[in-house]
Length: 140
Image (cartoon, rainbow, N blue to C red; front, top):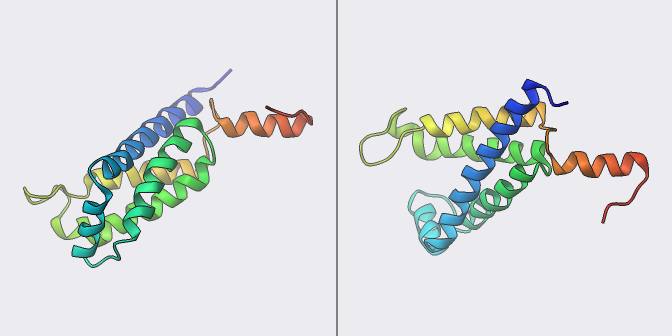
């Protein structure tokens, strides 16, 4: 039986994963070159756009599936701290009318910290894999 705590954590993990997946997908669908150019324009090396987009895309899928949730969430914590400090802090909590503020980034940061610290076991691929290793069985 899954307890309330694990159900709450599952909801956080899936919502965070879906949100990051969509953000990563949009970066590629909109032309990753545009994101590369934007990174360059704010003083970040353009090639970092590929890493960010891939982390969002692949990390989002991994979170939804519950695969390496703590590690992926830890990487997303770093991403959100960087986003807040480098981009959003200057425009304020709610933004300036042209750019969103850091309120949503802060919420994502808190969700990622929670999962990085506590993990998420409910309906997680990691649990299936670990169970197979503990019992000595092979999973196909």
